[in-house]
Amino acid sequence: MAKADQQPPAFVIAATLAGHLYRMMRTAKLMSLSASNAKGVAARAGDKALGFRPITDFIAEMANDTILYATRINQLALTVSRTAVADLRALDGARRFIAARDLLAGGAEAAVIAPLIDRANAERNAMHAETREIMTQLNAQLEEIHQRVRGSTIIVSNSRTEASRAGEFQKYLDSIAGSVEQAAGDIQKEIVACRGLIEQLTTINQEIETNAPDTNAA
Amino acid sequence: MKTTNLYNKGHRWVAFGRDPKKLNGIIDTNQYMIIDGNRALLMDPGGIEVFSAMLASVLRLCDIDSISDIFASHQDPDIISSLGLWDQTLPHARLHAPWLWEGFLRHFGLNHIEYAGIPDEGKTLALETVELQFIPAHYLHASGNYHVYDPEARILMSGDVGAALEPDGAPLFVDDFDEHIPKMELFHRRWMPSNRAKNDWVRRVRDLDVEMMAPQHGRIFRGDDVKRFLDWFEALEVGSAIA
Image 1 (tube, each protein chain N blue to C red):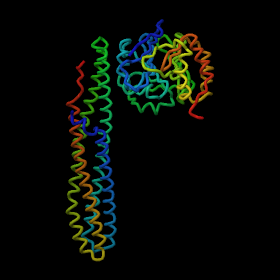
Image 2 (image 1 turned 180 degrees about the vertical axis):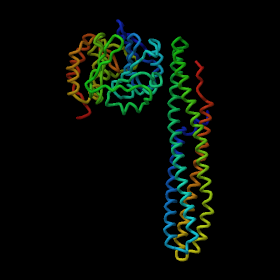
Image 3 (image 1 turned 135 degrees about the horizontal axis):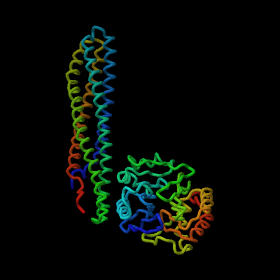
Image 4 (image 1 turned 45 degrees about the horizontal axis):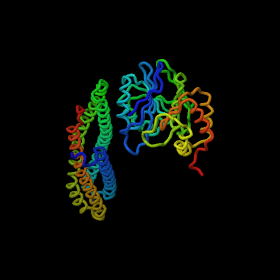
């Protein structure tokens, strides 16, 4: 049996992907909030947190970029899910058209059904091409997030260094660095999960394309 | 799927049903089609599971391009859950169905076919030579519900009114009305919710000249059995789920 029959359908995987991206966005929003808090603390700390201020800008930028890319990927994932449902319906249509043609047992009326099968298959091919294109975009956008979050280790390390110089504000800035570290770690986990799901989607799409129903069999 | 001619004088009425290959557990349904020259109307074309058999049966009788119109008496899955597949098959057709159900019926998938909502008071549809009437049958059983009356053929396609529940393979026509009553009684008592709606429908149908009454389940009534049905239905208390 094909692997595609053993795993959840593509639209379920794509919807799951959208769920991971939603969580990623939520985490990034928390990170953005941490950046705002950090700015506030740094302002109050004055010269004691001079080195912390540019770091807060980095954190905010990383959070905002993550939100931006996660939003885009979320839209793409939802498109994949919708397309996968439409593909399933078109596949169901093609199979039922084939069944109708077979009931007509090669009579003249059977020829009328051939264009319907062709149209359903053409629609499916267009959907597969669209999905392939979206997969490429999904991977590229996810990589963008990955690149940004990868820099978080350095930011957290710098934050801790700067916090140690902030006197009575150290504990606040340490706490903020801890929040950013936690959020970056959570986002990294979501990236790993998303990559796995994208890989599954790509495999399913390839299998669907190679296992199209035999439209010639009577 | 069995195909039975009901009328063939100028235009043609055909009934489809009693499919021996129908899956177990699915209620048997009657589908109907009127072929009038180069136009055809499919009535209550059925659920997804009968689609392939229906398409094959229909194509034996007319060109696919001639099926210009589809009618759905109401929104039930056994009536029209095949809509998404017909939408792929007949992208240029029009669906005549209760205006009330448009937002619901679109859930079956409607990307190409035009939804021509039937107003509460009903409407007519002119094919090539015959003008059909979509007769209101609200609350029988759906809140937006219509039947199709052909004044020339004197056939009333009566949706769920007149339906019977009986084993697969039953004859297509009622041959003994009294014997048929037990097969209809539970269905009408339970599925039909309103005595007022029922009596209003009976009154209006009595004014029509009906030679044949063709329900979506069970058997077709002919001649005097139509009047017998109206008398029986008028006397029946419906809405039985409320004690």
